[in-house]
Image 1 (cartoon, rainbow, N blue to C red):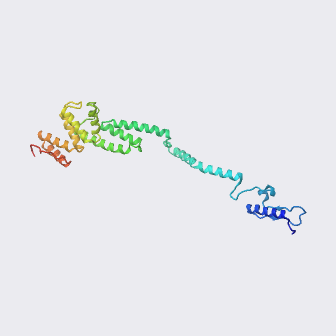
Image 2: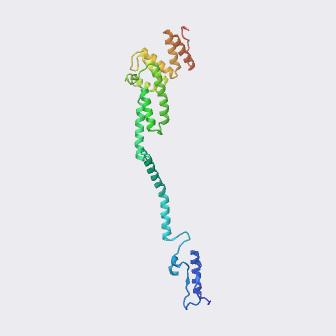
Image 3: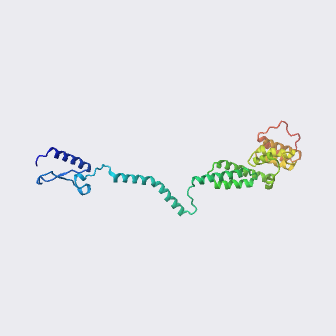
Length: 276
């Protein structure tokens, strides 16, 4: 080998560094080459670049314009993948089940909210136990996860109990549709069918005194006292016991007297007469 000049040494060092970036070592040309600048051949020169001047600077992580473009495309694909997966899943469900509907959009949610409010107001305005139960069942079916779900469930339970009491005391369904009484009377009627024993007791008093927009009716007094007693009013139970005692219905008087005491009612004076 012949000694190399300073410029040639620098060039060789540069090529060594460039070759290290490619993971390859340079191969020196044969000493038998003609005079002039010695050339250094790079392995895989066809893939990496023809001459030193054509060397393309790249990073070990796939740098360069093409590398960065590939990375950007990969990131975009990763971001878009969940959306495409959701779309494909919705298509598969729709194909497997014709009745399937994809989740509602925000506009649909707003419409559903309005419908929910309207349906709930209709329930609140209903005083007829049978109709009330039907409306609640339809509401629970159509809006199973609404903010009224818990209240609707409790209301349905109370309405079913009120319906059973209505039938046991002899009140017809038409009674609840009859627009009798003033606004306060209708308000109490609405509360009574939802389990309010005090409201039922006040209805009985209205029929006893002929107030609140209704006439005197002793039949209605008895029916609503029993309604109130079945809802848990000790006071109504005691008054029923008094009525049955005066009328000579000994068994009924004893039953409602005991019921009043069990409910915690404590009268000041015992019944004046006893037939049992």
